[in-house]
Length: 81
Image (cartoon, rainbow, N blue to C red):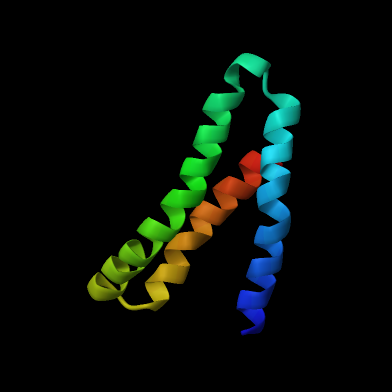
């Protein structure tokens, strides 16, 4: 429960911040495109996450789900830095 609470708090901060950054950094002509992409990412993850997790759990051991996320997290971290 504590993990879900932290996740909810982080989402509450990150989502408005993402849209504020889009509105601040993106040229006026492209704001709609970037807002749409941001919304697509937000809508896509809850739809695909359980399916992806179920396929991984069905095919491999549940530990593999965490192992496969490590390279994705590292690449995202490096791109963000």
